[in-house]
Length: 292
Image (cartoon, rainbow, N blue to C red; front, side, top):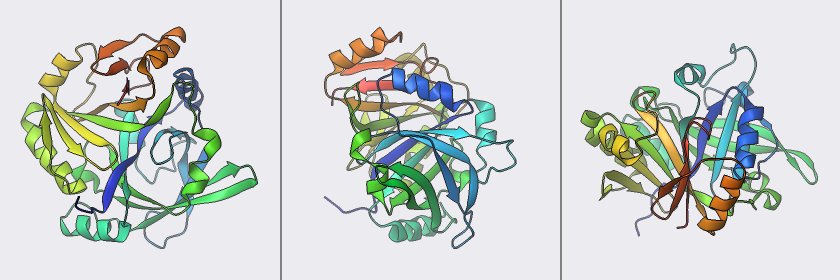
């Protein structure tokens, strides 16, 4: 296998202005969530680290995770320019891809005209059994002109042991990892969108029925034309295009997972290899559970 500088979907980012309600929903779906952790960062390499107006709670799996990103304050602090995205709809507005070598990835993406951010510092305080410690990251942001669907960035964890603490890795629903994310695009934009993600991820797309799939060593990006999406999941909304419509997690036993989710009051729909909870109940993005 060819070694590439991006090897996985590190995490998805679901944006919310009501962290308490969103966290309660995901806990009812069977996830163990980390405590609230507020972000500090800079908008330029080497810049002063300041509050970012956002904090998260995460469902962690060891190498991948789901991030619930809450917005806090009056909106005057928004260096990531997140609030215009939330104004369209609350839900998935971001993907983060994990790097084996962030400097090489930054150089490649800059050369292709996809990024001009440089390597940015990011940190947040997290609770550990020994007390509060600072988790540190490096990030490269894709230029938003090239990612109308949301905030796309690469992440390199400098302190992964502070994020993926063993006490947070077991979930009542049996979830073991982030398997895929699903992007819906306008029909005329399908091929260009697939080509763009092939350039971002440095991987070759494959066709699986209506889906165009960008496979990584861990996880996959799925892209579908809106006409096919409406046939695939006819009950699901499309509030804007392009639209980060959903994500899927792998689980140990899909029958047991479905029993837990339904017993907690969620409606479910069938999928090959599993089931899903629609965007209306999963806080803005469909959530699939698959035995893969």
